[in-house]
Length: 360
Image 1 (cartoon, rainbow, N blue to C red):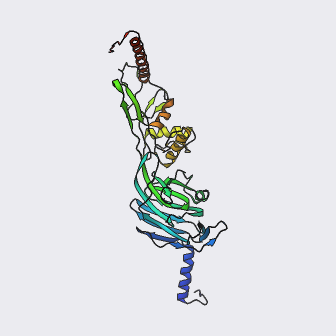
Image 2 (cartoon, rainbow, N blue to C red):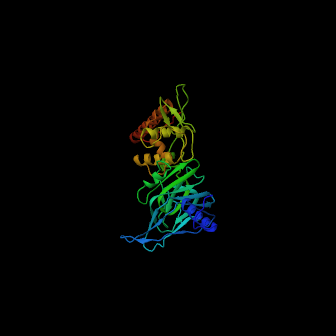
Image 3 (tube, rainbow, N blue to C red):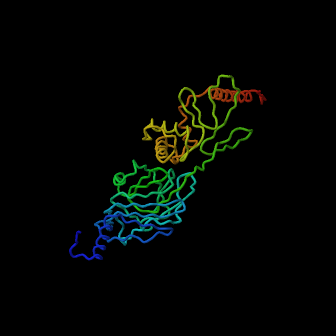
């Protein structure tokens, strides 16, 4: 039987506990309202900021109405804050946000926020810190440091790994959906808010005098022209997209994060071909990667806002290369003839008085 010189049973037990605590990451679990903060000793920097180090890996979990939020901080994490920061680092704490996410013309719902760090004080790190928002894959997320400072996170992580988090620039962040969870890698602490964005743009038109068409309001005005089927029509515009011509695809409905099906598959095919979406093959599901690729596409095509949602303006650009069907060609010819007829009627009226003409 091995003996440990100079250690009583009680001393040996204490020594073992100290050794285990140094090897096992600290795990903190909190309900609504958070829990006890971590406090580090800070030292001043030349630029007036102060820095402290969290020496052991630390995990913390907070429950929110939308699901748990798990925080993972690596060992030897250097935390920097402004002069006057006390060295206190608060774990994730559920809060009612005072900053409404702003994403252009879209409305937001399912807003859920957690405070991490030290209130509105900006804290930054030298390594990546991971936040896991359970059950929120495909949703949007952003952060703020007080009123009027909301910033949506649009950078998509290359993968869910410590190496990717560490490679972020100072104060940087990125997000990625993994399974059913939304993962954020960050080098700063803030109030983080997850939400669902829904477009609010409407399509409408107002009539002018004499039954004519007035200016169109909204993002895009569309009119349907019905023509008899002469047996040669090869396609039509329906409630969902349809393949038109030899290989082109017509995007006929709006869609965004959470959508799936042929519209998403064809969209991903375009985004992959144009270099905006870095995946090997279409998946048919509209998640965070596809949204980020749509944002890049919209920016390149000068579509505003760059919301990542495929609405009328984005569909119009996507459909520019669509091969028209016979029905579409007929509609175009009809509109051209009507325009010419109106011009002739105006000329006749100018020459000999008003002439009434009816067409069947």
